[in-house]
Length: 121
Figure 1 (cartoon, rainbow, N blue to C red):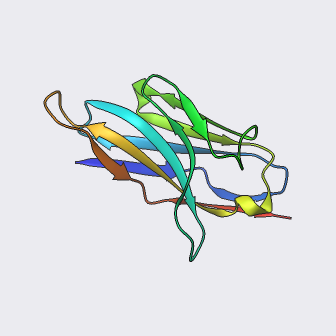
Figure 2 (cartoon, one colour):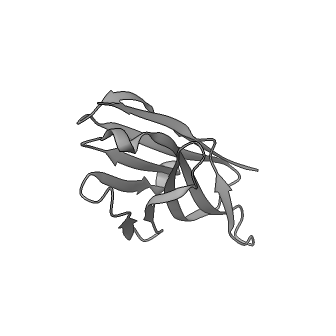
Figure 3 (tube, rainbow, N blue to C red):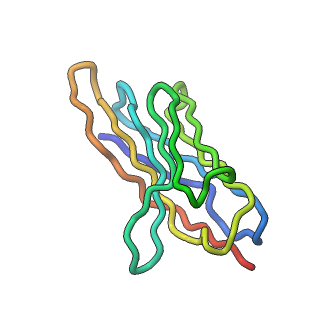
């Protein structure tokens, strides 16, 4: 079994910073691409940033220049550094990862439970 757990959310004033973490645990052989998503009540879950196993990154236009995604493969952890936060960044943030549990496994996608980010004006 594989679990993804997000942490690092909280309440911050506009212009502040937060760093989110997504830790994968359980039976893990390798982790391929990882993405951060966010979702407000009643809205769809939108892509924020992605990072491949090779370190290639991609960002939504709304967060370019402010957010940075990174990964530490040895720790099975992906980070989302969020700077210059705006009230419109308020959402629940989720991570999604492609995971192979063994050398003989195929990749499967897993979701974390989400962490709340609230930015006050």
